[in-house]
Amino acid sequence: EYADQALAEARQSGDPRTIAAALETGIRFHYHAQRWPEFHAAALAAASAHRAAGDRSALADTLGLLGMAETRLGRHEQAIAHLEEAIALADQLAAEAGKPV
Image (cartoon, rainbow, N blue to C red):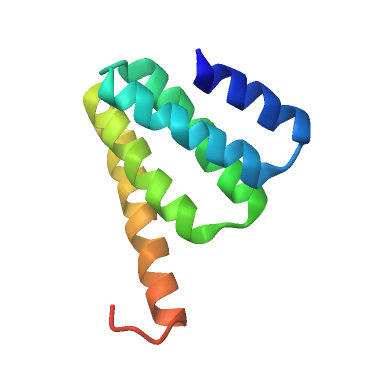
């Protein structure tokens, strides 16, 4: 599978942004294949990589996807927590950019 190969090469680089980008590819693949446990695992790993890279915008997006995955898995309390975190982060980014929240 190409996504697995891309992720392996990204991990060899050690760069959190490259790893996160490879994981994002996997997230979308698993979503379209309706492979919810794999979708969740990839979103969780991507969120961790975005945190490590300090990419708050991408983290907000990925937290939304993580919440979606948890909803599909019936983990509603976790989904709410991640979706609330995504919204709070997006609000913070908008405020820092001088945009109305």
